[in-house]
Image (cartoon, rainbow, N blue to C red):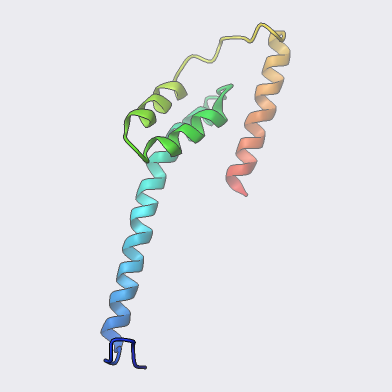
Length: 108
């Protein structure tokens, strides 16, 4: 197979392309694991704003590390604060529904 540059591609060229693709996948995977950490912590702790923490964690590593740190701190924030617009039982039910939805989104 002749390339556009006028020389033939051999096995070593294809192995180089494969190595570069593996490196790109490794970099993306290495970025995604810590970026999703605040969201996973918030879901495990049944945080009322778990979805917002998850999105801030992913968006926080793009420009700087500071928003990601805020998401990590937010994930550990005490969650015993009750919204005054609902009774505590209603708040707990809504939080459980939201956490179940987030867990299903993460799996599928």
